[in-house]
Image 1 (cartoon, rainbow over the protein chains, first blue to last red):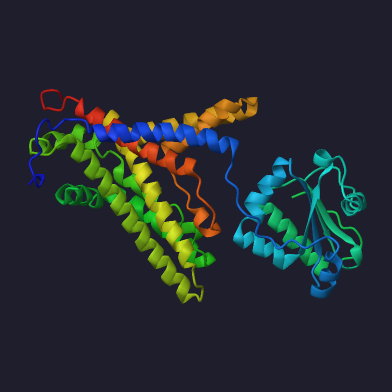
Image 2: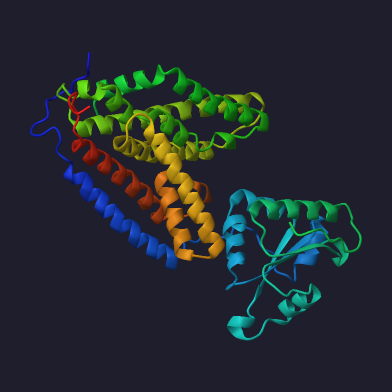
Length: 181
Length: 235
């Protein structure tokens, strides 16, 4: 038995619902407008990593037994912003970063202010930073465990960080260089 | 909503051995993977493919077999056929996804893992929105061609978009890459609810894009079916 509608529709059974076209048109206009807006002002997500000031990091590392992660970045660096959005703003990944290492955010202000603070300069020189982002894991006693130039994606970054952290805790000696993830 | 139309369409869909087999394949493997990996991640995004299986040929198959002509003899408007078939696909896809997520949760609880309630809610919402968008696009394509030609049309469009995007990326044609991404999103409209977990404001562009594709697809489907000559004589 073919189904029947509860109430017989009035007028043509082929009438286009005008309201649907109006809603579709309005949404299309809104789509273009929000697209242009978000292209200019991308939505931001808060950084969830508990960054430690660079000066306090060695003491914190000694107290917790964790290695230090230096994240050298700059406000104008696109990949740095991607990493912030995909890793540091993700609750699970941000928590993992804080559990693996003592995280230190070192922001370059050379382009904006013409110079960096003495601490930032000395850290950049000590770790031979020439591009952003540069990530350096430093173990007990200030020995560099591993470094990585560029942002390889959230998953690979986390694998790299976990491996470097394990090596640091195992008491790796000297500079260990691994291929970039 | 016309419950009779919804139930009749679902009865037709859920008694098809091919569709049932595909649905089982689509749900059982991710369910097994979820239990083995003790994570509900493999069950994410199930709604869209389930809706595609249910909505494939929703109009075209019935036009080809002459069933739709018979149905339209009754006092049923063409727009209501479209809307109710879309609704039936979405409800069934959402129901199946929820059932699979419940089974997955039980499996995880038996293995001693407690899934996050907020994450579960996000998966249900994403699957339902994915199902609503994909079903609307599939039904629109189904009004354009007969039989299961909509499936071929969707696959062809996806392959073409992928090829154009690959070429544009290689040649560094920024606006073509962007247009291809938009076309891909329009073919399989999804809506992410990740922002719920991050406690951040949602992307209004993503929400509006999804809603725009959905309404446009339904409007085009209705307009196309309204203008189609459907009679045994026309066939």
